Amino acid sequence: MLGSRRSRRRLTTALAGLGLFVTGAALQVTTTATPAHAATTHRVLFDDGHAEEAGNADWIISTSKPDPLSQDSSPSSETDWTGALSSWGVALQKTGSYSLKTATSALTYGGSSTTDLSNFDTLVLPEPNTLFTTAEKTAIMTFVQNGGGLFMISDHTGADRNSDGEDAVEILNDLMTNNSVDSTDPFGFSIDTLDISSGYPAAISDSTDPVLHGSFGTVTKSLIADGTTATLKPADNSSVKGLVYRSGYSGNTGAFFATSTFGSGRVAFWGDSSPMDDGTGQSGNTLYDGWNDTGATNAALALNATAWLAGEGTSGGGGGGGGGTCTAAQLLGNPGFESGNTTWTASSGVITTSTSEAARTGSYKAWLDGYGTATTDTLSQAVSIPSGCSATLSFYLHIDTAETTTSTAYDKLTVTAGSTTLATYSNLNAASGYVLKSFDVSSLAGTTATIKFTGVEGSTLQTSFVIDDTALNVS
Image (cartoon, rainbow, N blue to C red; front, side, top):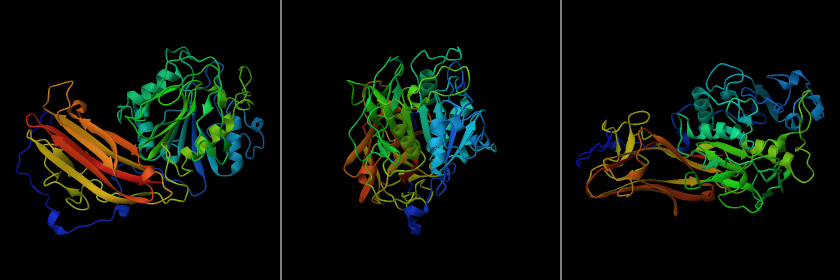
């Protein structure tokens, strides 16, 4: 409730005295089920339902849809399948570790279609040229949030191949900023409205990154042949990481290839479709062979990124985590607070069923501050993160305030993991409903770290920081 004020006489939860304790590894966040990853087969869906073949584009792995194996069940060269992405598809198929399909209709998640996203580990969006519907954006974002991999490939601004008024830059930015799951810069980057005519963007030096140094080879450079870049915003998502940069750029600007995480899933961005184009396709298309460009290592970049998105590698989008094996798990105990005042260490009354602020799911949530008087509330839990794991901390946050200022942060919530401050929110971030927050904490692998939320409220108008459905996922 907007501007709600709670009584100083807090009620401790009814379960506090029952001595309940649930181990972190046994609990899962009660949201839609995470896509199950097969032991050896990575399931990849290439989208062809959004004008990916308009104009001279031919962004398909095969003319046989949804199953490319119907064209050739055992391809040995890229010409055995027809499409400008056939080199990509055939290279994955030949490993024996991938199952590939093409979607030609609306994207769904949780439906009965054979190309429903729940049946896949990775979704590739190869320069879409029509806007995703509201339902499709919800499906895509929920798929990633619940553990899926998303590969977004753009082109230069103005590349409107079907003349509908939208290009890939606008379409992918719309996906990230206008969806029902999280529109607050969920991946930590935005795509630039640029048309960069040419160049060979160079990879950063990071021998531990699985996209740059993966099973398909080492990435040194990519290719721009009329493309764009992205601007990174690590303050919005600390896991975002630029891997390949336009000449003369570094840090948060000019990222031609970037990775990130969202919820339990992974995200990759590529700023041009030319690098994935193998120069062959359907009759009548004028194509460019960027895949085999001798000045770049585009094939290794595309294939390593696909493998990483599908769950291979031990490093998240922000790096770290070591090089050992890891068993996927959710590590926080009582992640949705439904076991009451157990596992977490919290100020009196923080874990509550009070109806003055609604839980996101179930009955319980953690409500810090909200009194309108000088208050400090804390919520914390120590968790051991195994060596060799990528680790992502996520939670849903609702901020409700009676403050009217648009410039002064009177009340603050600080989120820390070990000695690292992940984020600080304030009354200036108030919004209706819950918003998913996600942070890469892979650097803490091999340690026991305390996840802590500290809410500090001023002496007059209230601000409530309400947290629900936490998770610390490792993979």
